[in-house]
Length: 124
Image (tube, rainbow, N blue to C red; front, side):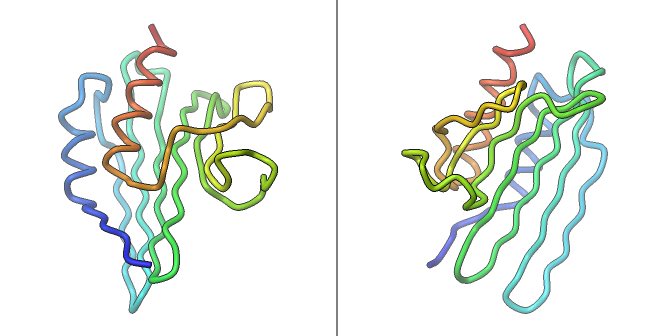
């Protein structure tokens, strides 16, 4: 499985998005056939944060987008632990623990646009 993934484009999108006040922390760990990427962003209003994690190997692309304040508010990810969901492995964790289907597909740049749009609607 070949995953097209442009990490600098993801960071640029975040830095230029109206919802993001600051990209606070970028962590990149690339070794051999594996990459781990983590970004923390401060949102507007500033009591909210977004953390994004990607793990890329030859076989898979794992992601998690988490909106939080003092605790997790919502999260999108593709960890394969909800096989009964129609969009498996892609799923969405609501505020009160419900796990639902997700529009995300594992295409990082498209998914980021969807996540930012949904967060913006949530915070308005």
